[in-house]
Every structure is written in C-alpha cells, then in structure tokens.
Image 1 (cartoon, rainbow, N blue to C red):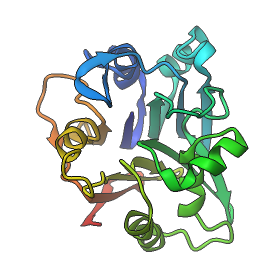
Image 2: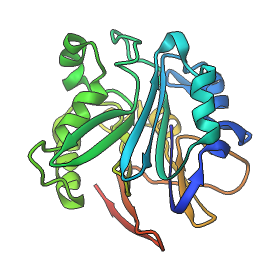
Image 3: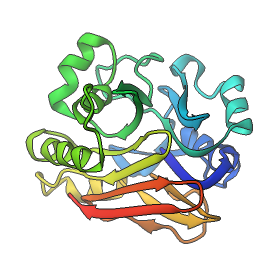
Image 4: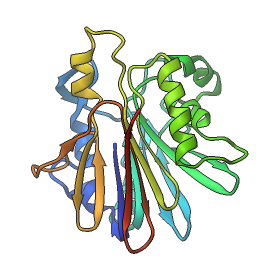
Length: 250
C-alpha cells in the first residue's frame, strides 16, 4: 500500500504505475506474509482514494477485475494533494468482493475519512464475516466517532487503545481526509518468535521529494527510503503552501 501528501496537486501516475516497484508491480510481486522472502500476487482486490474539490473520490475493484483498464486510467490521469492506494491479500475467511477491498470510507460530522490497512485484527473478524466486509472496516469504525471529535488527539487516543486491547498481527495503516494524512506502523510483539517475520513484512517506508511525502509498504525505487520504527504515528497536513508534520510514538 502507498500514500502521498503534497503541497500542490500532484499526479498519482509515478507511484501507481511508473516507479520500478510501483503499486501495480507490487500487486504481482509483493512480499508474502507467511515468508517475506517469497514474492507473489496480491490480487484479492485493489483500491485508491484521493482528495478532489474538497471531498474524497474512491475507486475500488474486486478480485475479479483488480487493476483493470478503467482503474489504471484513473491512476494515469488523477491529480491530488493527498491519496492512498492498496493491493489486497485477503485474510482467510473473508470475501474477495469490491465491498471488502480497501480503502474503507466513513463520514462523520461532515468530514470523510478513508483507511487502508495491512494486517489482521482478530477481535473484528467475526463481525467482518457477518457483514461480508473486512476487519479493516471495523478497525476504521473504531477509530472514527460518527458524532465528531475526530481530531489528531482523538484518533491517536483511540488507536492507542486498540493497540493495547486487541489481538492483531499488524495495525499498519494510512488514514486520510481531504487535507490530512495519518500513517502509522504498529505490529504485534506479543509473540517473540514472530517478531522477525513481522519486522520484515509489516513495514512502512517514507521518502520526502518534490514538496511531498510518500509512504509505502515497500520502497518504490532504489533511492534512499527511511523505514519507520515500530509504534510510529505520523500526522501530516497540507495547507496549500506547506506541509506540517507531527510525529510521536504509540
């Protein structure tokens, strides 16, 4: 999965299709959670969300039409100050429909939020199966208060509670509004035998370039990328002339 926030509207083309290890490339050659040294398809759906005219535009595909021509055409032509995109490798027992593809969207008090997530939250799996969606949708629902009060502090507080109270392998995710990007890397350290594999697979890398900041689960090219430490939380906002960045640990 990838995300980007820019001072001015920027194309999605490079990160989505043109980089040496673009998201399209990674849909066919992504690391596998059972063995990060092995690469293979992440073809169980795909999706993107980006800001446009003060709102979020969403495009999603199921396993049956992932990365079809119409989806790639959006990636070629769209410009935005903030976007996220995701290739899905579905957790066992979940449907591979468009409804279950990322990103997931919720509106609260006149503001729309979109989330992409890499990992599984066991506490949310049963409800996700009942709703024929993903545990990531339930994750988003737990992060956002429908009545409002969804500023940076509130989201950080709710995420911290989920990290303390839930059983999960990873909570790594991006969350956007029309002018904000949240990015966090959180994987479970409760089972010491699994930590080396989680450290290799549940990654988030950051690159600053051309008045923008790009995050990706894997580097998109061979230039230097910074690997975020586990339990890192970032909030970035674009005001049209500059980017503000707030960093803290969960």
